[in-house]
Length: 340
Image (cartoon, rainbow, N blue to C red):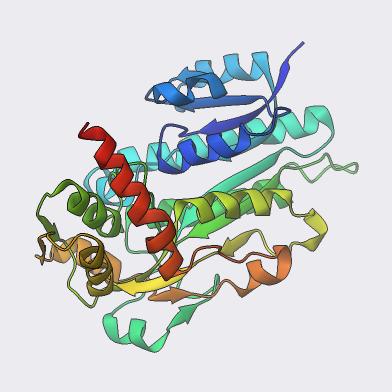
């Protein structure tokens, strides 16, 4: 008999580690995790972990034969900066692997005669504003506006949102007795900041990089100019958003893709908050024109009113609390322990 599990892909990444900790707090949750990399030692007892590639169809087939999947949190992705360097690999990882998982979820839903939930973290990268003037004019962007991404990562995320919508609404729906489809739900995240994990490959990573460098006493050259602005969210709120959306009754949801956000700061405002906590930090601005152009194509803020209305979304951390209660004390403690 197959073991019933919640399946988390990309579990060794920033969001994956935080999500695993939260889900594992409930004893009834049996969790299967997968990543190219091992879990950190302190997390290994929380799940059955498989090191492997989502593009390995034989491996996926073996997992399906051994486990009955109740829900999928598909976090694995090749992030924006690296995706620009390796667009074909990005397409394979971000799109083809997602397509395989959607097919698995659909087949599992039809076999069990009830929907498998598919939670998909999307990104602000799905937006694409053409220039700074347009960005200044459209201050808070809704889900259906400016969906013209200028990065491979953004294209991948937007297309996968559409794939998820297709599989949940139309896949194999021509029969007279329509089989159940997947329950696809997606959150479009702003830039994410974690106090625990070092960022890798994201175009919004200048914010967490600035913090972690300052805490270690390492000079940091920010790759965007001082007035560059996008919305952000700290990791506890990101995980909370995923879980709130997953728990919401399907009947309450008016869409399948939702914006969520917390606060919007310029790079200079982030620097000022970092310097207030680490007065000796050396932070300069040396814009990388290509990465800066990507940030300029993302909205300065996003409208998350649909999530607030449909599933009572509200961040617990505004900018002040994010820095004073979570980021600064946790990062200081982290590097103080490493120096012991």
